[in-house]
Image (cartoon, rainbow, N blue to C red; front, side):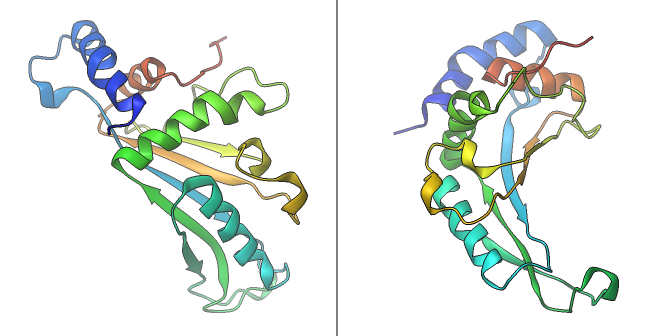
Length: 181
């Protein structure tokens, strides 16, 4: 069974984008390609910090994360070569739509004093990145079991060539953008 948000994309978003932007070919219509969720962990923390972050990321995304290791030694950061410094998950297809649905509907509204995400976080090529300061906004995380607060970066990669087209896509998909001032 396809994700609920994918059905919304096919039935509502595609016709709306086609009419607004006057696309002549169906392949010109922007779509979400993947979502990358990344958790960086300070190298100065204890050894179990990366495993705890990986466990939390597994619970949040439903996928096993890849552990990132450092390539170089940097003495000022107390960083050694081949030391674990974070973890990441790449979501595509149904898992991507399910995660985006949970992010927009359940997680983002749980942020304290939430007034919408910044519409300025596009990279110039139609990709959107947002930082989340605490993993406890996701309802899957049990507050009693976490040892430390851990932030994460979420990058939504779209096929849109410009920021304006990607903004329209994400707005129609339900992303709660803050009002431009």
